[in-house]
Length: 199
Image (tube, rainbow, N blue to C red; front, top):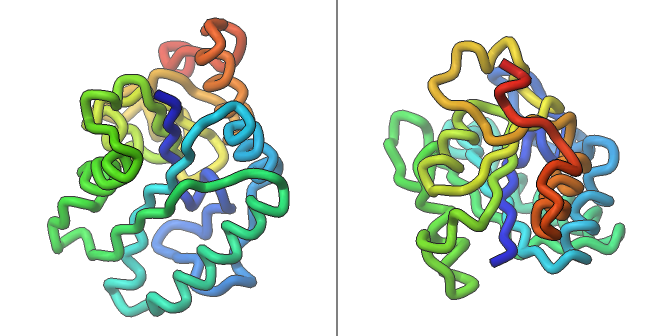
């Protein structure tokens, strides 16, 4: 199975800052090489899903319509580069709502897998790419291989306080894509570094 789950803010687009949200299309900026990274994964035959918490909607900071416009802008940018996102699944609930789709819970990952006729039994063959402890926990909770990117909210210093460790650490999504493709081709040591080197 070729499946990659991506967080959004800090992985695909520039992280807006702690406690802040991307609320308008003009505030959405791709991290360098992200569209090219998704194209590489697409060309290699991967289904790419975006799994993101967007509690700003639930808090009333911005509307669902604004989120939809931002998503359309993101998808167009990816498509213009020749890549494809299979689907985007958001949890717009607040953390206090205890929604089963809010990471590190895995409800949206289950939905994504079901949409391509897969189940959690297939998750050990999938990858989760994220920039926070919550992302890595979500990947671990589903049984995925996990990749921590240093392009977003948290870094190696944050990671020292985590309860979990990612399987790999890379600089950004482009390096993650190269790592995933190398792993899939049977060259596991070609890219990236094991998380023990980043502790």
